[in-house]
Image (cartoon, rainbow, N blue to C red; front, top):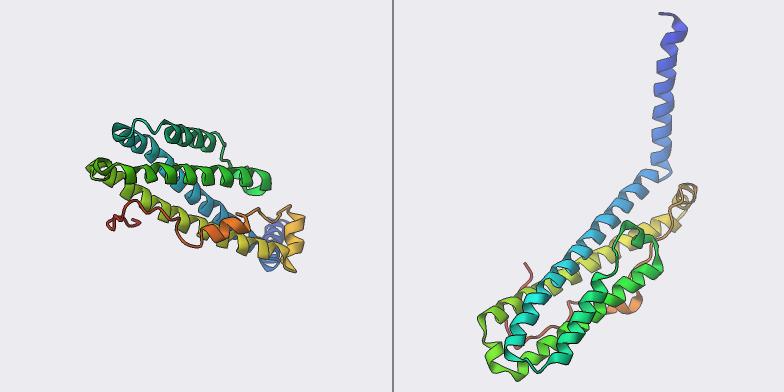
Length: 210
């Protein structure tokens, strides 16, 4: 083996090392790590909203047993659930402000429809005392708390990522690799989820977030 052939692997290793150090020094690795954290936190938001959506059919079913005349409320819940479920949630949503706004608006409508559904129980004492209803309302309360936690975590992760994307010198790296600030929940949404949504279903103190 010639001296020249020995030097080639060594030169390649040196170039790779220099490249790695350079990417790290310009903030590329940090940007990638934060991007992954944003994606992971968004997945948790979606999971918790899906958990809530999965509770709705059983919840409506038990309420209907005692409040068959509340058809308008049942229709509102069904429409809100259909609207929320009709939005395709893909990673691209994280880079699309309009898609993010549509998703957030649909989930807010679902929250409002569920609040109206649960308010029905106040007019039906037998419904309030139903064991299955009590279990479902406890699950819903816990899910609403988890949604609030997941959304707040997502907001924080996006704020951290966006700060890194905009600050010098990492903004130069972000521009080179096409990494843009990500849309977040609106200011109104942030204020609304600073605490868990109010879902007081008759004073059941047993419901807590898991």
